[in-house]
Picture 1 (cartoon, rainbow, N blue to C red):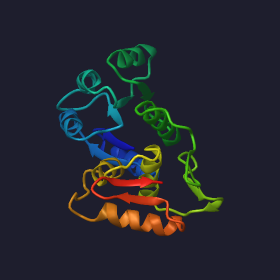
Picture 2 (cartoon, rainbow, N blue to C red):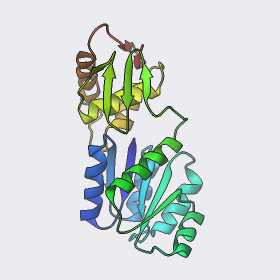
Picture 3 (cartoon, rainbow, N blue to C red):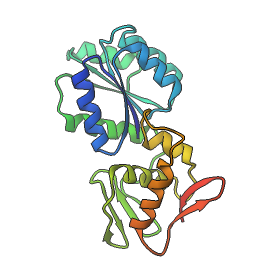
Picture 4 (cartoon, rainbow, N blue to C red):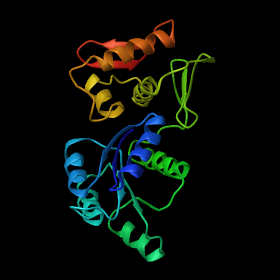
Amino acid sequence: MRILVAEDEPLLADAVAQGLRHDAHAVDVVYDGGAALERAGVNDYDVLILDRDLPVVHGDEVCRRLAGRDATMRILMLTAAAEIDDRVEGLALGADDYLPKPFAFRELSARVAALGRRSRPAVPPVLRRAGISLDPHRREVFRDGRYVPLSRKEFAVLAELLRADGTAVSAEQLLEKAWDENADPFTHAVRMTILKLRRKLGNPPVLLTEPGVGYRIG
């Protein structure tokens, strides 16, 4: 998934981003509400992790604007205020979920995964096609019963292709979902990752190229 973390405590924001990247997500980080609105207006995010008490533009205002503008992005609000009234108020602003600080990263990761499932059309918990099975929770891939070791980026790309269920996915779409904003769109990152995936998935080839369109699992 493509995730935006908006948190004004840099150590916390960077730790959350690092953990989510380990889970094979593409993560961008901002430290104030103005930057959060700017990034959300440019990139297509599945989930926004939003600190409520942000500088420049308060997290409440960020939530209010984005919840009314983006029907697909899900918002997980973070705050040190843990009273029931605070949670109710945060949800009333348009947040999809609410997590008080301090929190365990495992819970944050599980909530993000649940919100990500809600941001897209429903898919089975284990993705299967052409003899490939991919378990997003366990981060395991098998082909015809053979375990396939993948890097986090390869795993993220394969997950996007399997979610497309045989439909071609363009290089631009893969770059949007599997890489963060630091990726150079003029590099061959997608092509190189596809080449590595083909080699690891083995024969007969199942990762196909549709000239001028993109890639698909056949």
